[in-house]
Length: 85
Image (cartoon, rainbow, N blue to C red; front, side, top):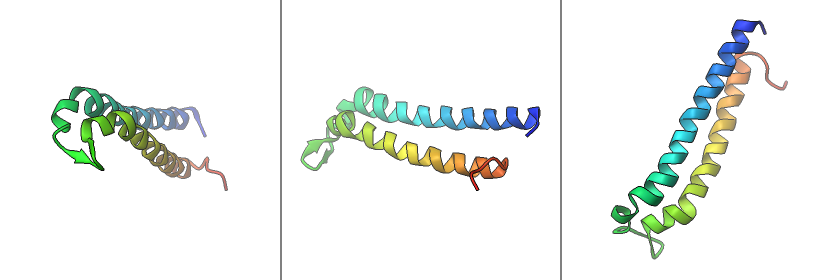
């Protein structure tokens, strides 16, 4: 890979990271803290939804985002021909 391809690869990697971190922040901070009072009017499994997001939802979202990141990076690696063959 030449220098321009490495730079493009790294830029796309950082773009994926920023998007996924913004989603995680929105779920953990937004749903768990900022909008908890509004979400508490909804119940999930007997618990208020705001409480659920603060305790469990952000963890589940983080795990899902890990799998999304792996999938995106595998596709990016194949595109730039640096995948494990």
